[in-house]
Image 1 (spheres, rainbow, N blue to C red):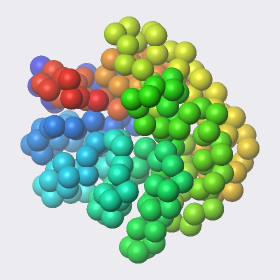
Image 2: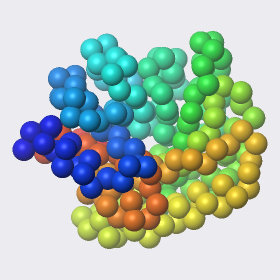
Image 3: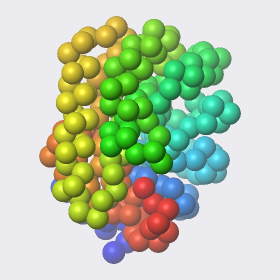
Image 4: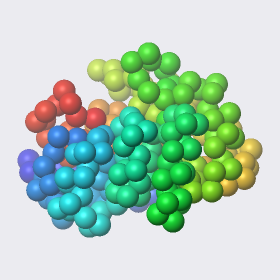
Length: 223
């Protein structure tokens, strides 16, 4: 099936209130444009350098989410490209984003990344640290916390991820009830190509889909 066919098939099963982020790591600008032409409205990139190249050709034909681990030395370029950063996992990173956004008079929506399974090889704050991180960065004037993101363990059976998605949703709801100033718990980004159906059942309203849209090429690198 073509990228167009994949997108059309996928969008038929995604509720209207859910944002599909096309995870475009390793994909060409031409492939990204094909996905946009088929109805994709948000592109997700893991690396700022890759995003720069794609953005130079695709531009604002879609919104752009940063979905990888963001290094502080890449923030200056990232804030110029992206409409939302899904992977804030430290006060230092949030301060750098805030500083760089202040220079270009931009308020950056961000999600805080939760390492829900406490995997040592993954980024994100541990579940018990999320609340404090959000409180610590909520007073920054050029970012706005808009929710949470989690990767979840990459199991063969997506059912095994359900418990982690459910825990993340509970944290999301608990923080929402706190009504922390300048924090709008609107987005819960969970689920990838193999697990998005389970993530949707557990309350995700952003899903990050790569192989289901672009096919199996470079599968090991795909998110």
